[in-house]
Length: 293
Image 1 (cartoon, one colour):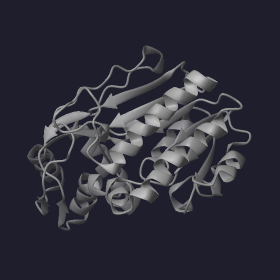
Image 2 (tube, rainbow, N blue to C red):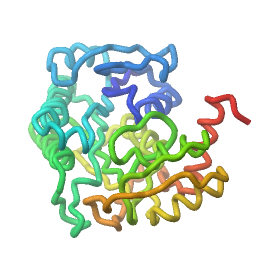
Image 3 (cartoon, helix red, strand yellow):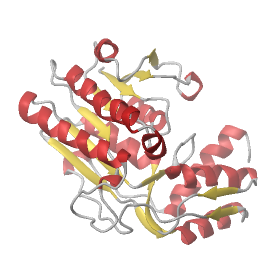
Image 4 (cartoon, one colour):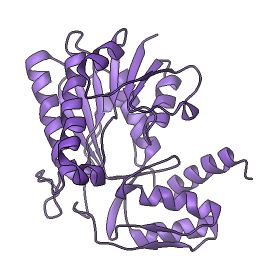
């Protein structure tokens, strides 16, 4: 049985990724700045630490055969403090790749669809500090493959949504799902047409990348299910019988239409979850957690 390190493992994407790794037969060690033990199974080893501390990352990697790298700051936090965003997202990622280098450990990590600017869905041209740091991490990944044969797979999901505690402007749809179940008002702070990526899709693909060690340093765009925000709200209202969600704000600085990159066949089938199913899955998890029928 192999042990996998998950940085940022108690954030929004962390718990479902940990669950996917456990289901695949791995032991899991979580490395997080402020770990929330309540969101993880008791079998998971938890280590508190800062991804910007190279020594701490190396120590956390000891005895591991792969790394899922999720630690990072989101769009709003990076805009508020660009230097901190660069330290955590870029230098922290370099620490992770450096820790993986001696053993050539495979790394599955999160990039973002925000590497693309709103006018070009093919050639990366980020319009945010967050997207800029993530595009730089993709370059780091390529360099570590060419120089040190550290294999990696980066994912560029659009709007990741689902149950759990999300943060930043992209958290709007997830917050709306929870609020609708509780029959509370909430506001999504961006408008327009976007790709909705269920968090379970991200988790399964990250886990598969660790299970099936790949060569090279690939970065895959995950467009998910592309819909107008009004369609998402209508479906959420249909499933919850609640109309207390509003939308305000400009469209995101990302192309309205993105095309998902093909997933390598060795990783299996990873079809995108439609919003109808994704909302239903999210509500089911939240209802179970709340003890609601």
